[in-house]
Amino acid sequence: MYTFYAIIPKNVLIFSDTVGGLFTDKFFSIGRTEHAVALFGSYDENIKLIEREFDVRVTVRDDELKISGDEENVFKTGKVIEALMHFINRGETLSEQNVRYCISMVKDGSGENLNQLADDCICITAKGKPIKPKTIGQKKYCKSISENTITFGVGPAGTGKTYLAVAMAVTAFRSKQVNRIILTRPAVEAGEKLGFLPGDLQSKVDPYLRPLYDALFDMLGIETYQKYVERGNIEIAPLAYMRGRTLDDSFIILDEAQNTSKEQMKMFLTRLGFNSKMVITGDITQIDLPHGVKSGLKDCLRILRGVPDIAQCRFNEKDVVRHRLVQDIIKAYEKSEVTKNDRKKD
Image 1 (cartoon, one colour):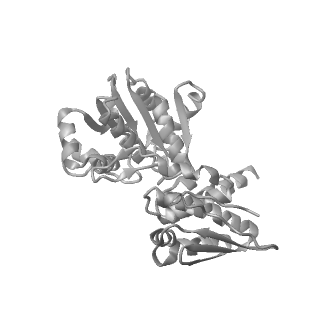
Image 2 (cartoon, rainbow, N blue to C red; image 1 turned 30 degrees about the vertical axis):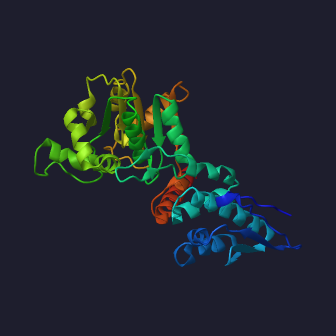
Image 3 (spheres, rainbow, N blue to C red; image 1 turned 135 degrees about the vertical axis):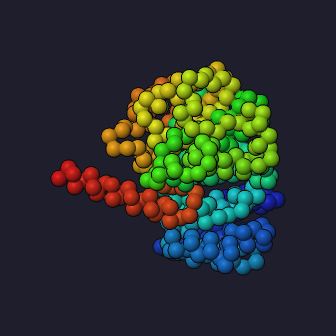
């Protein structure tokens, strides 16, 4: 017999009854009707997804939710629902990403840490929206940034590497831990030539820096952002502009670091000044450097492994918080790469 507990309003206890045999019915007490509505989602899409993944049947009557199916699958479904109820009780709005992530973590036997995710708010956007880590990998990444002077965030697209780094930078700036935010990335084209675009130098480099602008606009609002730029508190520039500088009292983010050369990466890292933090983000599977030029990110990850006060955080497809197809695309490319490497060995 299993007994489930979850935190719901008014400290109501959630319990279960077990029916003998291979199949089991388990019952949950849902404290309030609106919580059941939030759990099931629009057109019951959340529960339908859970039912498909675990081959169970979930029904609700009044304030009682019943899970029916194979005993092990019912147990796992209960763990997922506990985690989702925790999100709801903390005021979170469930999304497909939340549900899929909880399912994947429970399937891997890592569901015990899910309740921690809704507790951390690292920044408030200009519109009052709290920014919180959505995966365990993101939570570890934010913690590493807080605890280390230099943090590398390496992983596929859509894992929040840049966005969370900017959020941590804004938090440090608002709390006066640093006086400046400096955002930079190498101006390397991803298969497109932008050199003949009209306009001055700033107009030509803006396309490379757009993701950084977007993140700052979201955190600060356009007017506040422009005010800080005029005061010199925020600087966004191509990596080449960093040469010869010493960056004190600053939170510095290098984005798309996989497109730095070995020399550029060394130049950037040695800009670190007193009372500053650096976050370097990149995806080593999306290198756009010319043929024969080695990535500075790959090189420094090897060289700096084990150096105190320098953390390396690795993301995988489970940390993707964009459309679910992005996860599937990343998996497909990884599978293709493994197959290609196996063929080379043969």
